[in-house]
Image 1 (cartoon, rainbow, N blue to C red):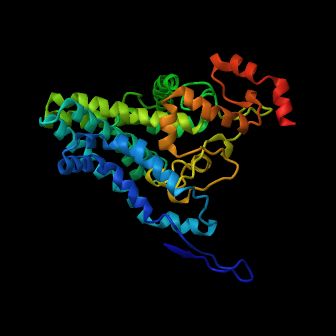
Image 2 (image 1 turned 180 degrees about the vertical axis):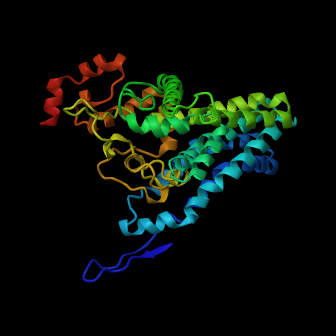
Image 3 (image 1 turned 120 degrees about the vertical axis):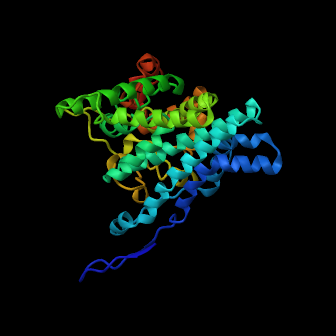
Length: 398
């Protein structure tokens, strides 16, 4: 799409701009095709390793593509935003993900229950389907923030596969209100490992989603246990989907359903861990937290992983403008930058010593060496304060 703005009388000259990523967004549809690709590659080569195409792509190929593709710091001109918003091509890039995701989920269940696969091959295929579920949550994230009711409903359908429908409630009404504060279960703290963060975020987000929805319904004088409850309706989609799979393929499909769902929401949570690690909104004079700004989210402008995740890595602008569509999300110079895209950061986060070696210095640099301004894991506070005493912080600032 090429956009040419009109020149106002005596005003700024016209601007001609072409979206350089327009056709690249279709590459996001490669993700739900991974189980089909795995099946085909195994058939062509006879090599069972290709049942593990999901992790091979995420931890092998995508980081290499991020490195080769480099960074894209460009932003669409403000004058182009209205036309970008109105262009339904970008919406169809996300809409088409859903039928492909459901098809791969069903075919995966059929393949693991029909017989003929070893348990290692079945596990590899299940993990690949789980990667589709987890990366698909980025699509649900995009759809769930939109004003159109149809798109919000599609988001809950996407989340049904990973049994994480309550994310729709907690992320929009909980995380966005409390992001980069100790009260947010989905904001990781400095010194907190991913393996500590995972249960805190999973349990805390579930509790928060239920509390938020229960309060909303009570304020409307409606029953909490009713079809008006967005958490219950989202979970019911998972139950219906699971029962349909069991009816089609037998009770033997149950391990497949559980493993791919758990892996799917764990991938979501490790991305949550990366997005706000150690970042903290400061309190103002009235005791409230300052407004969320670009410096409260870690960003990455690596092309490959951003295309596959619908610009999820431009996270600062997303928190500033939650309803802004992915094709319009902008880079901010003052947002802290990750050393690589999410695929590489996920691998780092899984190994806490490596993660701390890479990310702790970045958090401290972001706060000009003043560790007291970071969101610190309570059990680690004394250790960080001892490592970076006030005298050293003042010296570093000077």
